[in-house]
Length: 74
Image (tube, rainbow, N blue to C red; front, top):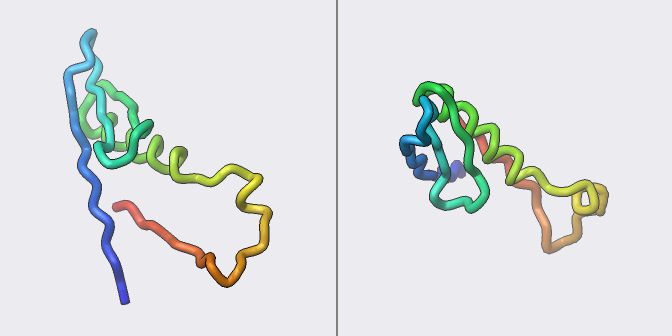
């Protein structure tokens, strides 16, 4: 079974030639770029950073109430 998660990228004029991009559903996933494509690429990188667990959580064994989840962004 394949599930798809959809996110919304909001682009805004950041001033001084910058475009600000944010993922509406994920607070803290914000970045910028000089072009819309660059802002999109950078906000996807910010999303990866926000969703990457801290080392304190990744070094713990998975219990019966945990399962791994892989999210692919294209």
